[in-house]
Amino acid sequence: MKPTRNIIVFTAIFIVVLVFSGSILAEDPPKININTATVDELVQLDKIGPQYAQRIVDYREKEGPFAAPEDLMKVKGIGEKAYEANKEKIVVK
Image 1: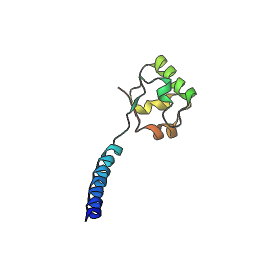
Image 2: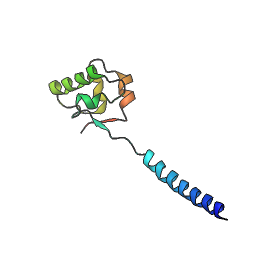
Image 3: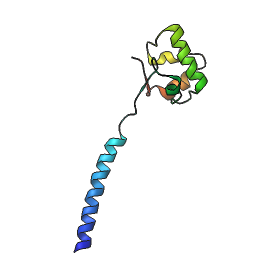
Image 4: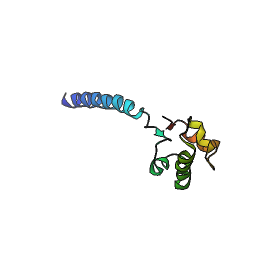
């Protein structure tokens, strides 16, 4: 009788953990504001290394803030592929 009870308790706990872990895993990662991000933050983006991250910072210091996320493609060397890889990860505020 006791092993059956243990199995039921274990199964119930497992189901509760599974339900809560699903909602935790579904959360979106924080977005990177390309108007304020540092070089270290920008290199976290896909296809953006230190050199391109520095170009982003230099561009916004010279030209002003980005008006829209797709303006990232105005930075020399950052094209549509890099933008597409990151468009869900970046914002401008």
